[in-house]
Image (cartoon, rainbow, N blue to C red; front, side, top):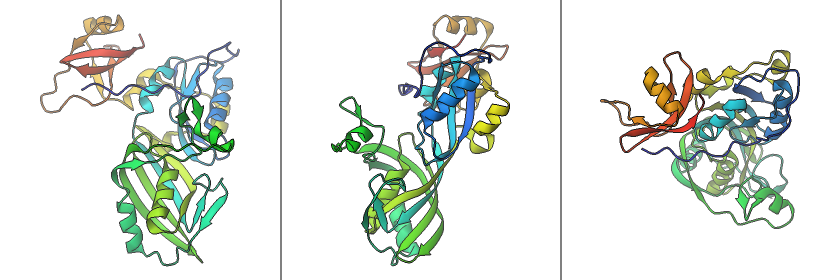
Length: 315
């Protein structure tokens, strides 16, 4: 099966390198604080790493906290593939109010009592947002329309009409409900595909219930194989900056294929290999990380037509 095309890593720039710090290649799993943009985090990591070759895999809104996967040097070439991986979130949705941004940073644009929303009614509405769904992104988002970001058009008074896109919500579980007069705050965990907007889920849940809704809290707890328990704050990184080495970083996110020395040489030179023998399982849907006998990461490969071809080579 052919792997989906990788997305361009975000926040990546080239330019003169800063001096005085190690430039080891690898990933940094950052616990992003609230109030910072993802680009702000990348800028901080550039200074800590001593290089401008830094990017991130998947934007988090300024209000959001949690896992932001940052790549340094060669690891930036992993980011486009990591962007496509499954995500998990812990969120709080406020029913009874709609906002201009679908989260608490926007202006309130509508109110409707959520006092009559029962646990059963809520569960039914949540169930309607699970599975393969068509989702319209928020108008204040980084989606490009005619080469311009949707949020810039919206702030200029020319909000674009965005088209619905297919996304998959694997799990949408309510964990708590709290009433405050006409408002209802709902805590939930969400496990979803790349490209899913949790703000849009909050908006659509409110629309389904006739109350309006917006996001008041969002914490990303997992990106692929990288969990918030393994993330480090910027303060911790400032005290001791380390990267997750390439080989270890790839093994946490992709299936592994161990190569012979001859296979490693061929793949490092851009050659193709026979597809891996998998008598009891189908080919991996996404990339596979291929390793030399000494444990070095050689490439990410995809399988098609009985062959494994390199997507990106690191050797």
